[in-house]
Length: 396
Image (cartoon, rainbow, N blue to C red; front, side):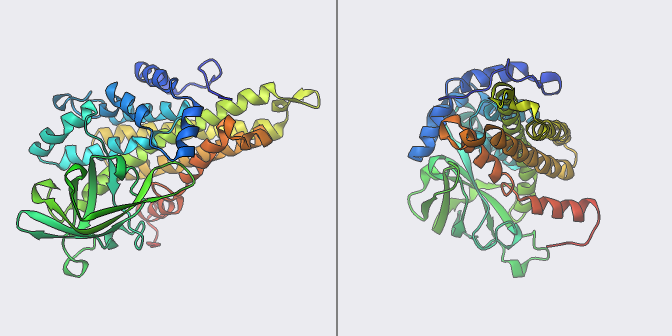
């Protein structure tokens, strides 16, 4: 059974229904990839090649790339809309979202030669830019303590270390890699001495081993081991030792874009739950008549609405080049909770049927749960707000 959400079933409309042509185009593609497609990928532990290829061919994955490099030159908000519609349609943008939020690092800090070499191919879909190597098993979110080292030897960097949760690395042509180029005990500030390397995985002959990690959702994630991996010096993005601020800039974009996905999930759950609550009759009445069913769905709608507004504000600030750490983190926090609470309401509304894989709800529910801990945990966001917004003592 393939349960899908249609426009006629979904009465709530995002503010102004911005980018209607993009929304319609993305939905048209998603209609070709129903729940059965995503269930089979998960069952077979496969990557969404066909879906990603079609999105690329239609220009959606190159939407944020400037026109002079072959993209559409659209703002970050358009990226949010694309990812939101994928999730609202029941799909998963995790297969391709990294390309959008990593683009900014190259655009803002890369050399013109790097942009000319890679961006046209990325925009055309002939180059996949999906891997983001930052997190390590021993340091987690404490990025400044990462252990992966890159030592310059002539015209190349030699990389040794380990990364984890590097999703889609085995399906990507390029990878953004954060490394320490100056030892921690040799820098004044712990944020110094980190650098960003662009690794062309197509050119790697040795020095890199990938190990797939099975997870509760089909994110196609990996653990990476670097053993004297050689990366040309020309693949350094920006200045050596300044990579931490480059990555932070990209993380704000990541949180805003992923918020779009979570808003799409919330819409999906609310639509499915509202429709089913009006149709399912028990004890002579539709179950939506019961406040125990109706109120959680209504509250989820209110939470979605608030999260949508903050996400729009964060995207606008980012696009204007203004500080947006508070808004980006708040958007991610509120959107993740809106999606999770909507998922819980949907699960309760469908009851036992929610556990049946053919209804797709349990798949999306598992997806929504992960957003509480990734790409950054709720507690880390609260710590950021407590310290940087409210001025309280540093908690970590």
